[in-house]
Length: 223
Image 1: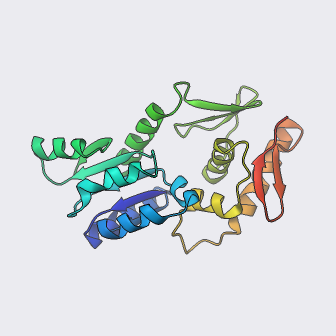
Image 2 (image 1 turned 90 degrees about the vertical axis):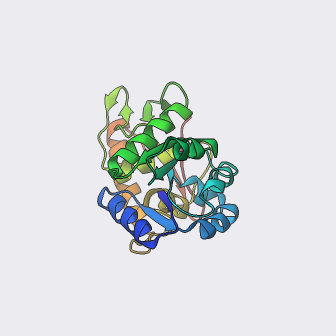
């Protein structure tokens, strides 16, 4: 999920609509609302954030510090002022990147992915048994072969592997895949996605590596 912070309602609505067209969940706050939320949100909600996009507002320059207290997700600023001083001020307050309007949402997503690649392990991938998932949006590999998956199933697999060793709930998975504030999708859709993912993994591996326990959630089970 992408969090957009801007004091202008039209800007928040515009970005959330554009990200939605790219199939990426997002939500918008003004700076004051966001400050309260980021300081009080549950860890599972914070962990679902893929990037923060900040624009204009009186408190904007204070936000990166508040974000870093809770999350290492990329912080990208959108600048309306084509000046060196404004750009340097944004970097000084702790953002990871600055883009100038107009900017396509795909460019923002690409920049966020590039920042995450630098922040994550140099290898750029995580292995659990014969399963390898990547940090740049590529399809995973199983036993060295590309294992093509629909985007939702791929992101669920990535989320389970990033939380290997921990059991995660249906709500946590939903928040990571659809966004904390998506009210148009029922949480039970996660069960359908996981069912399809498990069938594909079982067919490929000969067994089901996803362990589920009622009321407790899911985890990648690997001996």
